[in-house]
Length: 310
Image (cartoon, rainbow, N blue to C red; front, side, top):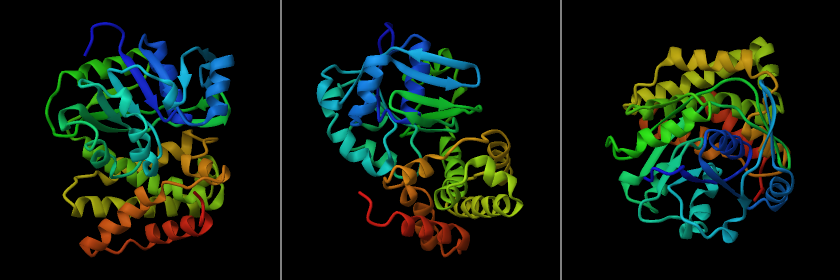
C-alpha cells in the first residue's frame, strides 16, 4: 500500500457505492466511481455528485466512468455491485487489478468472498459489512440519512497491514469503521437484518419507517431475523440474537424514509439480491434441517414479484 493518498476505485457506484465514494473522497482518498449506468456517470461528471445527509447537502467532485474508460490500477477496489453481478463486474474490471490491489466487499448477502477469491489471493481479499443506508434519488444524486457502521477483515483470517490503512480512510471520511476478526458474525447479522427488512419492503413497497409503524409488520421483521440467527448459530456462526433484534428496531425507529436496496431494485424494474440473502438462508437451513417458514415465504413472494427480470 502506498503512503500517498489511497487510490480507491468503487466498482458499482449505485446508491451505496456513490455515498461511500463521496465520504472517502472527503477524507482525502483519491476515488474513482465506476459503473455501467451511463446516465449516472454522465451526471456526476457534469455536475458533481450531490449527497444529501442529515448534516445537509454537499457536492462531491470526483472522477466517474464506465469500466472500459478507466485504465489505471488502484490500491483498493471497493466492490458494491449487486451480488448476482459481482463476477461479471470483476471480469470487466480485471485491468484495474494490479499485483498489490486489495479487493474489499461490503456487499449484501452471502457468497461474495468466494467470487472475489477468483480474482486475487486470499491475503488481498477483504470481506465485511456495512449498515449505512443509502438511496439513489436520481442520476448524480444520492442520499443517506441515519447512522451506520463498517466492519471488515481478511478473507483468510490473517492480520494484514492494509487493514489499518483502509480503516483509516473510512474514519477520515467520517464513517464508523472497525477491523474485526469475527466479521463473519457481523455479516450473518446483517443478512438477518436484510432478510427481514429488504424482503418485506420489496413485497409491500413500504419504507423502513412504514414497516416500523405497523406492529404486525415489525413483528414479522423480527420473526424473519430470528429465523436467520437460528440458522447462523446452527452453522457455527455465533450471531447474537439480541444484537440483531436491536439493529432491526434501531433501523425501524431511525431510518424512517429509507427505501431498502431491494425495494429500490423492484421499483426500478431490476432483479433483486433475494437469492443471496433470504435464498442463501433457505438453502443453508435446508442442509441443516431447520424450518424457516417466514423467511421462505418472503423469498417466494419477492421471486414471484420480480419473475422474468434481467
